[in-house]
Image (cartoon, rainbow, N blue to C red):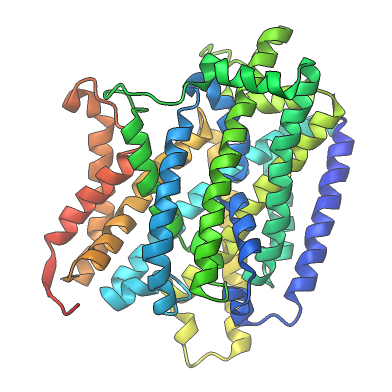
Length: 496
């Protein structure tokens, strides 16, 4: 079993490296460097950094463990993501660059009006706050259990350990913004991928088999079943695949957090090159995560180690399958590799959220970028206050997750995305593919009513549809319902 003191020492060194990188990149920082990295971010660094943003600690912990209950079905969603990234590259990015946007929700201002812009921004803020808090909660819970509880004999409360993590994250992000994050997230993405690859190396070594035998084990395992064609099930292939396409478009292409780094590239061509390579890498890395899951369960089975089970329900706690084995049974090397990957996954997915939430609030909600009464010093002060405020909000929501979350968190986050990004998908679709103008004042009401109606349909799907289960198509259903309601308040046709 790896010593908690060793884990703490590594995390301290890791943070010192991030702080140093943050200090170097944030010197002489300006509003332009904070929001768009002075439009000089190297595309290859953006592509690598986006891996950490997309995968996060949820993928790192939840996806391998979920193989035990869902096999390789997650890959159906990932293949849909690949198609969705193509749509982003060839439809959304050209639009954003042509309009020279800093916040992508400025498009909604130009197309529909200020209230719609604020609505789009608030949908993003709610979704990203919940998503980032969920990811941080998962990783912080692992660090709490395997480090603080053991090192300090359960005397450090979870709220305090989360506070320390958020304060450290705040220190290297609040000044440099995107200019800093392009470099820190690149470093963290490399560590994340290294974590999963070296975890596979460690477990193959412990099983005393060759890599070719490990590959055969994965391919021949029942856990590697990938495609499912029962129409009534939530993991029906076309539900996952098409849902994955729309989820990628919404959660990446209509998401300020994912797009802000893309808009910091030197040109549209470089941004598109970044998306292309990022999409390829994402498929490969997710295959590694799923393969790791198969190997984890194979090792549990062959070694006789009991799986982590909820004593009340008797069900496997999928989010503890990987941490339990890596930190308790595979030795020091495996434990350190796990901590490397988890730490990188945690902070690469959450640190950029603070910057992009600040951007969207600063530009879309408060309109401080165009406020002529404020000088640059006051604007910077407002920016820092907003940044710190979101850190505090994350802390509160993480504690909420601690009290109420059950099950695999990757499912929870995808469900939240389905409800919050559906209206965004509807707004951008109407804006891009029709000439319709909307009654601006009705948009926020409909963008709340649509998801509520969608939730009622989804939660009562058995009584409405019989055996049919709603899965990844939730975001499509939400967008359709919200879109149809929005079309009811159209006012007139406008010129193309």
